[in-house]
Image 1: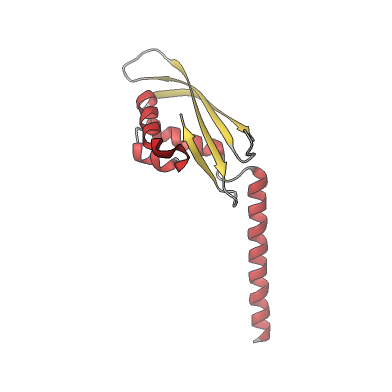
Image 2: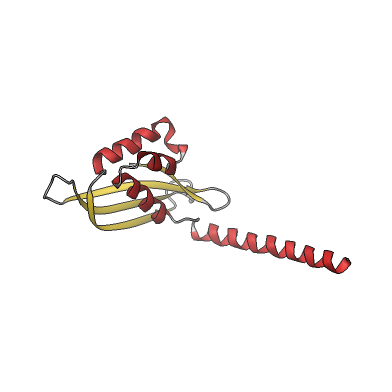
Length: 139
């Protein structure tokens, strides 16, 4: 019985230790998922004109304008064809080094247009104390 209890306590200790190590690694890497991943996911929802998905990806950092931001983004880029997309992430913006700005540069064209235009889209992310990264606002 004492052996089983000891093994159980060792297992719990190892579990907590590994969890703490994972959280430490996440915080050193800037959080999970990455800002580039989140920005790409949000932008894909905009292109596919999935307003609810885009709104759900945004954090309340946009205040009451969350739906308006998503609607404006869909109006501008929704349904467009996109090519040559690149994502550039800037770290440690402002007084909060957890904040990152993901800039998406691309060429796009609306279904009715034959001409490709240059587009730029930026979205902010931050991480909570556990290292979990989330979108702050898009535009």
